[in-house]
Amino acid sequence: MIPGRAVIIGSGLSGLTAGVLLAEHGWQVTILEAHAIAGGLMQRFRRGPYWFDTGFHFITGSDPDGIFRRIARRLGILESMRFLPLDEDSQYRIHIPGEAHFDFPVGLEASRRALCARWPEQAEAITLFFADLVGQMGATQWLDSIVPAGSPPPVHDPHDSVATILERCGVSGRAKEVIGCLASILAMKPERCTLDLYAGFAGTALAGSWRAEGGGEAMVKPLVERFRALGGRLALKRPATSIQWQDRLVTSVTDAKGEVHPCDMAISTCHPAETLRLTGIDGFRSSLAERIQATPDSDSAVLVYAALSRPPLELGRRHHFARMTTAENPDGDLYYLSPSNFHDQAEDQARNPYLEAMLWVPCDAVAAWRDSVAGKRPEAYEAWKDARTREILAAVTGLHPEIAGTITRTWASTPLSVQHFTRSRNGAAMGLSHDIGWLGSEPIPRRNRLKNLCFAGQSIGHPGVVGTMIGAFILVENIVERDLRAEVAAAAAPSAPLHGAQAPNR
Ligand SMILES: Cc1cc2nc3c(=O)[nH]c(=O)nc-3n(C[C@H](O)[C@H](O)[C@H](O)COP(=O)(O)OP(=O)(O)OC[C@H]3O[C@@H](n4cnc5c(N)ncnc54)[C@H](O)[C@@H]3O)c2cc1C
Image (cartoon, rainbow, N blue to C red; front, top):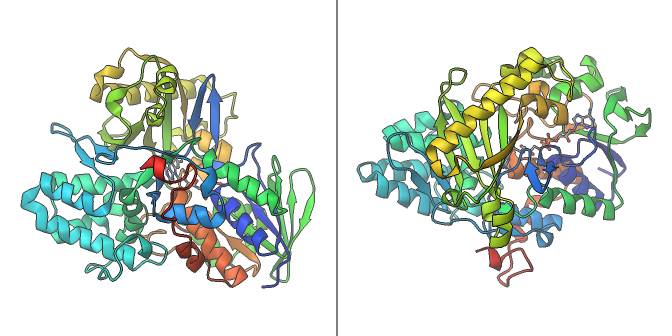
């Protein structure tokens, strides 16, 4: 397609990635962002000396030769990122009720070996499952570079659930629970998560899940700089209010200040229900409009941010998963870490130690207060939030008594915060549900009735840092008709260490 004017709605990772790639290929790009800060779910916020992340904890596939670092190198942002050291023998700690925890080391093969060592009687079954996982990654464009070349395709149908495939391989009991619980990285249960989705995020997570200094902003800031250096315009506090179209072609996008942005191409990265609102129902094929309306949203989260009086050293430089049972949420998935522990400056760690903990909850948990306004939420909502905060912290301190008594202050966010900051329908953390039967094996198409209206973002393809960036590459590849995947593959990490990007971190 001949380069022209593009308007991108949303400045999350998908919007920024698409913006940089299009601008590189001669497009004149405007990104409209509703919020005052760029980054969508990669935004951070500050309370006193603490910087907290809203939708970022780790970058899957960020091992030194991993897919994320190749993508970042291709986008020209790798050199400005600094990856923080993590415990390579224990990047994920899974807390098992009544038993010793299990540690996933960095690497798929190392993880397989660790599981076989813990459950030797299931070693064969675990190995079968990992062969399927690796095979599925090998069969997936973009992920094939992570696994050994020529890995045979999976034996089982990758559209089946991880729970089903584990069973068919003969994995059972605690081993099955431990492997399955990684589905919770993106708010899914193993019974509802296909192997192909699991390969995309749990597979890349096992390959290596580093944190970056500066959290989500470590990617957003250099992407914004690169976008602007390429001549792109980022318009903040400019929610798109309508998409104009004629004869099945988008002609312009109007923002809340009334500015009309004429365009030859529009890309919407927000929740598809918001895009539907912007075009009006006739802008969509009726089958797609119905599908968007009928597809449930993914779960959302309550996040607790806690300032501590001393570093929670026992938490280490790792990610923790645990099961959490409450009256409201009998089978809750809890995730927590201490971001300050990842900093190598002992002084920094000691000065501002803190904790982030999150529990996936259904969006409807806060349905009663959905129409309330941020900053003026009713007392009942604040009481609900306080109760969840106490429960989450009780679960974490129950597992780590060293933290009890060190919490000096807490803040929390809920599905209403996600809704307020990203306009995701009902505050869904990952946009539309990616469960089997919904988006799992059948993603929403990237184009629709309006020929020059394209979609990107977490509802359309894979969620997550790597998933949304890959989704933006796939979309732009089709627009600019170039093999961007080959360019990413060629952007392998150099053997010589680069400033901040490689050697010091491993
Ligand atoms: C609690 C939580 C923890 C997470 N942890 C991780 C993690 O550790 N690792 C990982 O890989 N992934 C994680 N994720 C997932 C990851 O954050 C998301 O999948 C990804 O950031 C989504 O990017 P996006 O561009 O698709 O959407 P978003 O980041 O939601 O961006 C969409 C943007 O569109 C804007 N917008 C909406 N409507 C309009 C409009 N009308 N006009 C203009 N702008 C509009 C929004 O303001 C927003 O900025 C987490 C998510 C959550 C919620």
